[in-house]
Length: 241
Image (cartoon, rainbow, N blue to C red):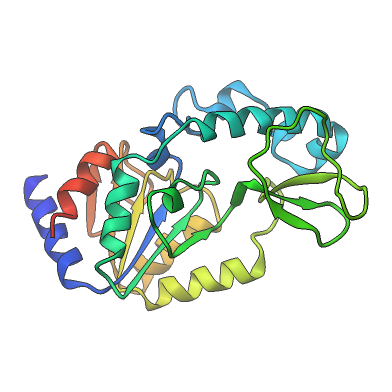
C-alpha cells in the first residue's frame, strides 16, 4: 500500500479541484459510533422508531430522548487527526469541498469552511409547521420541545429515512462533484443513496476516485485507489504535501 499512498499523495499535491465525501467512519475515531458496522447503532436501536417521520409523530418524546443522548455524546467528542488534516488540505486548495453524511459538525470544529451537510446537523432544529429554524446545542429537559413562534413541535433538522435530501443541497453537491477532478471518499459504507451516487457519478465520468475505509465497499474494485485502514493514519500519510 506504500506505493499507492505515494501515488495518491502526488495526485493530491498536483490537483486543485478536490471533493471529499465522508461518512460515519471518519468520526468513529472521535468516539462517535457508526451505524452499519458490526455492533453499529442500528443493531442496537430501531431505526423505524427513531429515524423516520412516522416514528417521530408516533412518539416525539422518545425520539427527542434519543437525540438528546446523541447530542451529549457528540458534545463530548472532539475532531480527530483526519478532520484536522482535511481542513489543512482545504487551506492549500482553491477548489476543495467536503460533502459529509455526518450530522456531528466535527469538520467545521476542525476548521473546514466548505462543508455541505448532506444529511443535516444534529444541533439544528426546525418547526414541523412554520419556517422557524435555529442552531441549538441545548440538552432539553422538557420534551418534546415546542416552536417559540407557533407552538408546534420542533424536530431535529436532519434527513430521516424516507425523506428527500433538500433540493438545494443535492444540486449544490452534484455540481461540485461534476467540477471536481478527484473524489476522495472516507469512512462510508457506500450503500446509502443518494450520497453513494456521487461515487458512481465520478467513476462514470472518469475522474480519479480514492477510497479510504476499514473495509472494502461495493466500489473497491472500480476505483483508482482503495486504501484500507484507519482514516486518521491514511489521511495523514497522503496529505504530506
